[in-house]
Figure 1 (tube, rainbow, N blue to C red):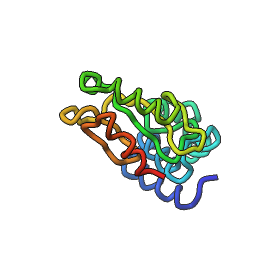
Figure 2: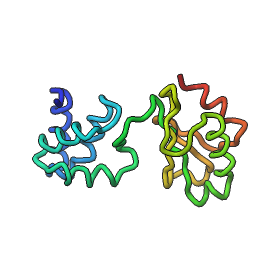
Figure 3: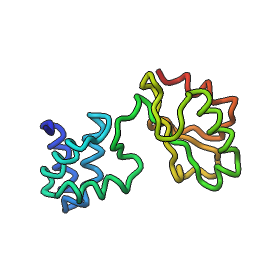
Length: 154
């Protein structure tokens, strides 16, 4: 069941965008912030609140890599796999993270601490390679920096 706070925030987004479908991604973001991810049940609740079908809203959810349709760890690592990052060391960064955490893309560590996901571009090509953990951007990454970066997150 949507909380009163979630409903209030979603209503504000609908007012801002003028159409329920246009506010769909923001409505999902609002619910995800409080619940961690968007379950099928949550998707249906939001769709019903917006007057949309679950399929209509799911089509919005699947367009955005930052709408999580499966449970994720406490911290989500988004590793940029753009061409620029590939040219500046992406493969070594990916291998180091995979070896350090023991997970591959789409997986979560057994302690629920990290989920590793690829992202098409973080928009900082001039500082590649890059990754984002939660909302913090890390740039000019080299394998030697990764252990220290990961240690910042409990």
